[in-house]
Image (cartoon, rainbow, N blue to C red; front, top):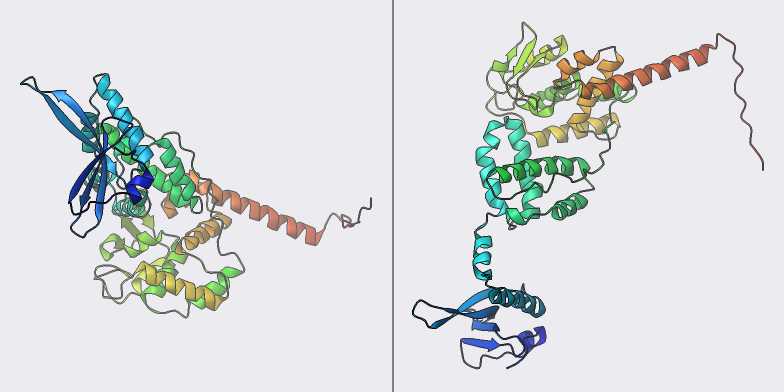
Length: 396
């Protein structure tokens, strides 16, 4: 009998007209390899162990437990697995039953299906879409095929390291995964949450906004764009709404005479928004009064986000400024509102934030800009006749 090594398995096996061959290892009793010819002529090479167990009639019955194919189980790894299984038999354990139980444990994609069926229907449409996108784009490619109980904290850390280039997406995906693992605990799929102590990737605050130099040229370039895409961009610019809120806006949500819009599903739930007269004028200018407001098909479908981004990029090119995303228009509106004197609670109501925490960044920015502008004016007027600073080069 030969020693089952990778060299032997790969290079020294010949069936010689047979369809199946069993080769037993010369060093480890009970460790063996089964070679079969497939329909296409290739060879299947599977490691296994054999173990004798007593039967009801007093005779001993030989039991065969598969380890795995040589393509995924190198010889030394298969040998170590076989040795562990044979040792378990000696002390009375049943590794075959343990392996069968493990195979019966749900896979990550089973958890995804359950999560989509039981948890996501309770969420707002925008939240469902966001969760599903992160599951399909990030989590399934990373964890598909893994048993839910086998996913470790180190696997989650490895996922976060892979996604460092896009920290915001990674952190939001981690939050979704954590919710899924909490659901897995409720269903007894596992005992703990591997996301509980994972450090989030460091996020850089999105500070891009259209300042006093860029905003006028942007608005001028935007004025030349006609149709629902141009109107939607104008609406986003003046309101600072989330792009999903504008695209899903329908006529039954709007009361133009009262300058109010009631949004039944937003990121923070039901939201009632006051409309400025400019925003109402943009809505009133649409050529239809049914269905989606910003629509190229008389309200039957909203305009596409992809096409909206394309039009926005062209506007930026015409204005000769760096390209922006629709979300930058939200930052721009909030920043200019704060600069113009809007207080934190006013920003929260106008832009649909759930708490005052998000408004702090805009209030602090407006205060900083105000101080800078005030100081520049004072320096230019110099009513206290302060001497100008002299610049000297210090020499060693």
